[in-house]
Image (tube, rainbow, N blue to C red; front, side, top):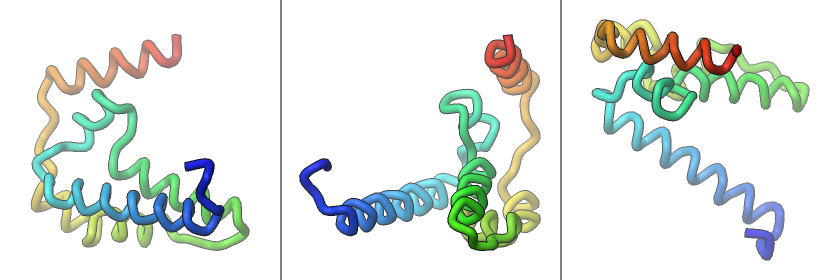
Length: 103
């Protein structure tokens, strides 16, 4: 990657990000809590990162607009159709991970 010019590298990174979003969209059955437990990020994190990067560059990006981009639909719609209630095991794993990170 270091041999690529900045513009090409940026285009490849952007394309990989769009591919990640398509992959997540194709796997709506994968719940955010599962992503958090396994990889320490979720779809909401991606939206927050977009907002943070926009702010860092002096651009305004609304969090709800960023989530709609990541989810491919308004978050409330995605949540109503695809989000499942977290299991006790998922919640316990999430809480343990949070405690580990803080401790």
